[in-house]
Image (cartoon, rainbow, N blue to C red; front, side, top):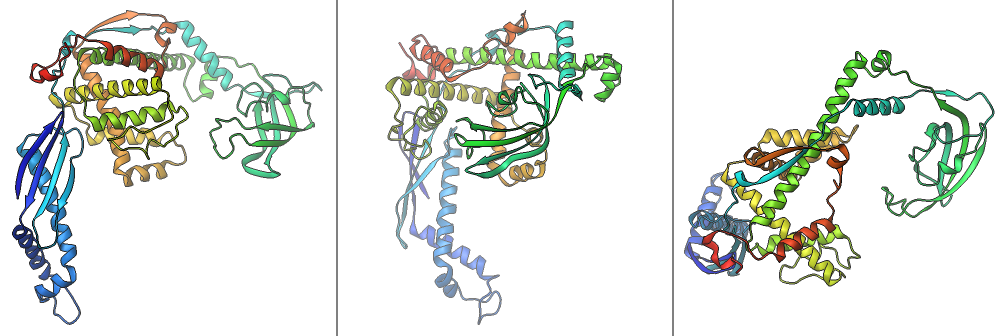
Length: 475
């Protein structure tokens, strides 16, 4: 096998591979000899089938296996001997081959760009901290009491109003046919809970016990069951009872009704839960600062294929009247037409570049510090996902067990969290006490905000990067 580096362009290295026909023939012959020792064919004793017969019968199959194994071996050899830190799977292409002739192929691989990881100890992060107050605990317990409140039948002949609970039988029909999940008997519906589609509960305000009512509605455009979205539906409703909430005394008996030994223990549990929520929000704010500071600290050329793939993902997320499916338009050489405006494309490109850059920086921090995702980490993540689907645990667990790619998708967030935890240990952290409103203010990180940060990054012209990669330095 003869391997030569052909060219290097930006972050792509290309290699030429030549395998002589004599080498291919020997590999095929060796495979057939090995196969002959256990081959069984009609008319021949086990292990005594002539090589010529095996070659006539299985020659093309064995040749295919040899070529595939040789290509994999060449790829592995190129990566190891040239110490290539690949950012994506190498691409192999056979350029010339006929049976009985030499095989020519080429391999192209995108490499990790050169850049210097910022000094993590110099990162100054202000971490917002919110304390749990007695009022927060009391408010949470009152909410729990309301959610677990009991009801009693209203004896007077009055009309239903908001916060009443109706016991109803209902049947929903689309085009005259009852749809799946559209009917129930003895259903307890709290008016004002917004548990039904818009308009349903409002049209039951004023009904009395024993009333029947026909409610005509349209399912929302963004309804979770897509087969029902925008469909006209007619509900036949019968009111069996009207009930009202019974005031709950918040005491030890109330705590025991929840399976907790005392009110004091309930308060401690609630305090711990609120504290955990605050810590998660605090960490999210600190993480966002870390990502912003890392994005502002480095600049380097990006691998085109990864940047392109991320651009497609961003376009899909933006969902702006796409003409093509991003999955169908994945030609790295051509920019797909999504029917997006120039400024929208510009935003998508800026977001994609920022995400790829941050991903590579975090990955390099992980590599340099030997941060890895262990099997135990993936198992815990799998079980967390399984618990989100009560009653379907075995189905979801089997899905992960039978889909290694789905398991690998869990690894990304785990790896990122481990790196963020590592950075938080090194960074210069200053804790700042804030109110709850301040802690949770602008907690949503949407594409528009990300685009603004990405464009701000692309407009900077004073980056400091690794001197080994001077060709990428902006002047």
